[in-house]
Image (cartoon, rainbow, N blue to C red; front, side, top):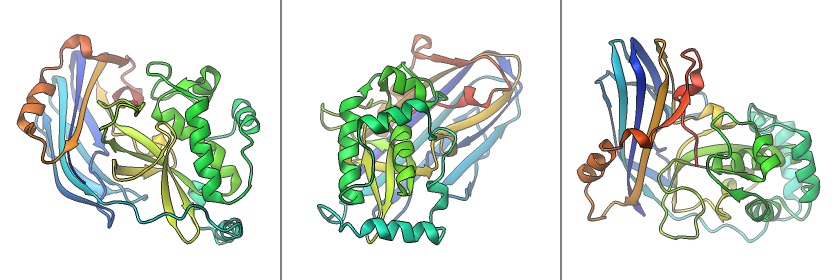
Length: 321
């Protein structure tokens, strides 16, 4: 399946700021399963954009705007081909648990086995693990598929119940959250079982109304490493395997490693954020220029305030929904 993806982010400042420094993880991965044919990135005010690969293999774009400005707009456009998943077996042999233990002894994927900033044990998480009977049983693939369904049924999808930097206890106490929360909770439940588990940031094509996640935002899901299979994606928000509709951008231990935007600015100003995302088949009759023009018309009432402390790096990050 071929997709065209537009992602427009606008920061507006209450008074002009003197400088903005920003890094972005918006460039889709280029792999055997997912081919990136086009990626275009621009900013207003205009900036020289550089890029590098982080230690997890994600391509990171970054720039600096040294002049005074009261708005910052970032536009990313991608054309990506996502190929169907290889046939996944209905289950793995019970010996797959021993295969995972061997990986642990060899130190493979150790970063994805230990607690991280947003995916770590809490009393509420322990209670949920007991409620859902999260323990080694059957085989790892069967367990992960069942857990995906259990989290989908146990947690309600609801925007504005959590924030970009909310710990998992906020969603666990309310039993409500967005895809970012669903992914963190599943990772925190799975890692203690000895299954390497990582956070995936990306986009989701929404052709069906039954998807619970927002169509106008970035998306997040989980990948677990399974012996003889490799990394397999699970989307607990929508109770599905990550497949041809999921477009991978970055992977990390949790959201802290892969925010679509992360930056700081100089100045005593409050910032407000608006984000517009569109994912559609590449042969859609709607043109890119029309979509970008539509995004450029986001009005001030559509902005969501995200911070007022100019030293707080999270004020230039966006929650994944």
